[in-house]
Image (cartoon, rainbow, N blue to C red; front, side):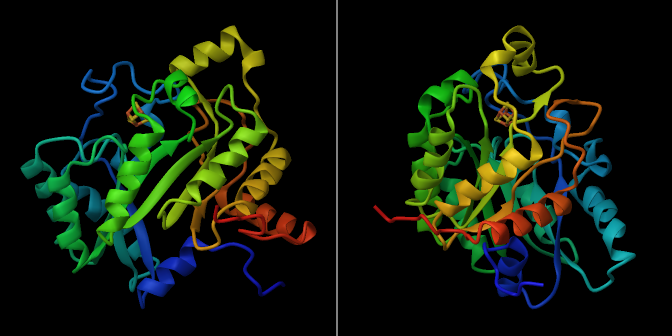
Length: 309
Ligand code: SF4
């Protein structure tokens, strides 16, 4: 078994911060999305069906402490020593009245065993007052903001109705990282209209930004979304990858990635009943094993092709 790490793994990143094991607990705090209610846009991103975000234990929007109790009891039976990060995942978790937002974060931060929070949000939805708050909290607890960047191309962002630009993403990332707050991004590989070269250029552009962690997801076509209808009408406009093709695409991507960045995941798994394609039927850890095997076969590693200009 090869000992050398060929990319920066999220578990090692957490081990470098915490002297104990930590587990993320997903929370649906009942927030909404400004790209659905007309504030930033309407109709939402063309690929989004928010039912795909939440594991079973947080589908009903119970209060944050109840969701944490349920999530934690799921893990603590097996690992009594485990500590937790509350992951505000569904919709836009910085969209709302400041006091209401803080109340929900604090319910999580004060919950026994919770060591910090991870906040998933949009790059155009991070007011300075909230960053002031996160900066203050981050001196005591772990705080990470995870921005849905998805693509670095404005043409793609318009096509998928994201309602924000790449300039918004760059500004949000820099404003957050400048405060000393852990800053993560989420990207979708294989959005319609993007060539392989354009996908790989995302890695080069992101590598010049102060990003700590990155999550990659393959494009998935989800039932009851606008993109599903586009796919039914014009399937030739979509390039869906096989597992092995995507393994090589993801490796090509991380070869160009800044070697300081931490890679949290390579794929996502939407519930089978909502997924139209591609139906890989592969678990996250199985995919990660494929990536590691292929990195050895290709004798390559994260950042091999990275240049800082
Ligand atoms: S992906 Fe996020 S920003 Fe886009 S519509 Fe869904 S919840 Fe809103």
